[in-house]
Amino acid sequence: MARTTETLRERIFACEDGALLGSLHQLARALEVGIVTLQQAARVLEHEGLLEVRRGPGGGYYGTRPDDAALERAMVSYMRMNPAGYEEALDMTSLLFTELATAAARCTDQALRDRLAGLGERAVAFRSMAEFGAFELEFQELLFQMVRRPLFEMLTRVTLHYASTRASPVVESFGAGVGLWRAGRLRIIAAILDNDPDLTRFEANRQNREVVMASLRI
Image (cartoon, rainbow, N blue to C red; front, side, top):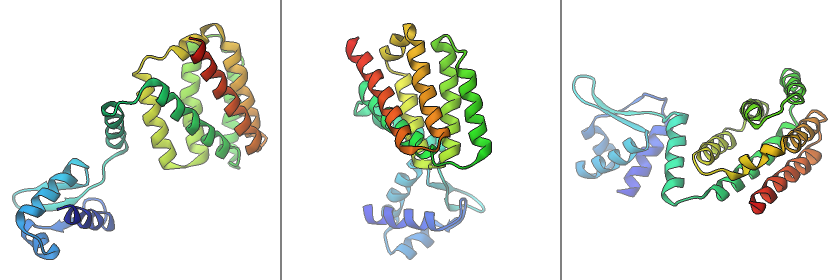
C-alpha cells in the first residue's frame, strides 16, 4: 500500500492542481493494484490534502494542493503530539530568524529596503512590548518578502504560532527591558541595510543570546 500511495502522490504532483487523475477502476488498472489497495492509498492522500474523491456525474479522483494554513496546522499538531515545549520552539524561532535576517542582508530591492528603514525609524519611539508585538509581525512579514524562501517562511510561521500558544515568560521578562529589545532590533536592521550578512548574523545571534539569558534568569 505504501508504494501505491507514493506512486499516486507523484502522479498528483506531476499534474496541475485540480486535474482529474481517473476513476477508481481506471487508476487501479493503471497502477496495477487492487481496488481495496487503491482506496486505502486514497484515504491517506485525502488526509494529506492531496486528493479529492468526487462521486456522481463527473466524479473521479482529483489531485489537489493543501493550502499554507493546512500545512501549518499539520505541523502544529505534530509539535503538540510529540510534544515540543516552549524552550524548543524558542530555539527554532531563534535559529530561523537568524537565517532569515542574514539572507535579507543580501536583498537589493530598494522599495523593501526603504520600508525596512521606515520600520526602524518608527521603532525608535516604541516604549512598550505591546507596541513591539505589532512591530515584530511587520518585521517578520517584511523579512519574508525580502528573502522569498517558502520553507523558512512556513517553519517560522508554525513555530511562532506554536510559541504564542505556550507559556512565554521570556516576552514578559522584557517588560522592564524594552530599550534592550529595541536596541537589538535596530542593530539588526542597520546591518541588513548595510548589506552586511556577517554583521547581521552576529547581531541576530547576540540578541538571541540575550533572550536565552533572560529565560535562564527566570
